[in-house]
Length: 265
Image 1 (cartoon, helix red, strand yellow):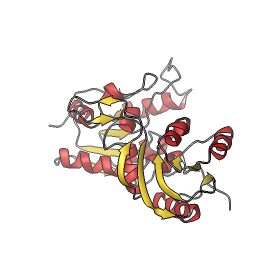
Image 2 (cartoon, rainbow, N blue to C red):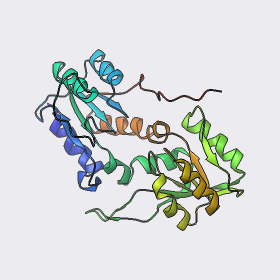
Image 3 (cartoon, rainbow, N blue to C red):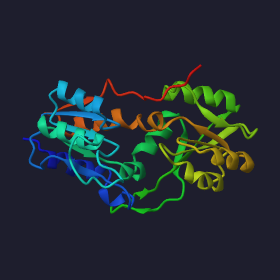
Image 4 (cartoon, rainbow, N blue to C red):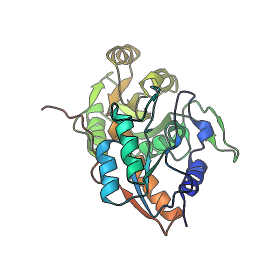
């Protein structure tokens, strides 16, 4: 019998919880470790629509990237907050919830490696490695790689089609694209690291107004492809890894979770 503890232990081999940032929350956030697991739903977020999908699939476990309980202290589990509603619903339907967040961002083979691979970068490497895992593999947040030199407009079209974005926000520094850094999700604060690494282009999400201005001043092409679209490529990969590790368990990648943010054309 596979249990939630077994899944948790396996995820720790992929993205050790020791890598997570100090402010983060990751691991088993709802349910019992001895929970029997026959069906897993994998999705980026533990949103109510995803939880309903898990209920409809009769899943025993929800595995997500983003945590069910995040920075704000949860002082009560009731219907007054969305987190409380989600926890109550999961418990009422016997569904456990596990997530791997910033530990999966930093881990080798995690969110940012998959983003770099999805965008077709070659010679993928870490930007500013932060340390070594016990097996000697380096870990860190951003990835960098190369593409055949092309105009920014061509690369923008490639990013949009590859990540299935409705639209992109960007700064054009006037440089062609050749050396690219990527940081899925809210990695815009790492822009200077991408610039110092000699990258001409940085693909990330959640970019603020002043950060676009800074990129323009630096001469760095900056592309905001959206939080969902820069991180979601990892989730079907994670589902395939879980399925291979636990062949007797049914592992399903969410078909209903999409980005709620749209562009008006």
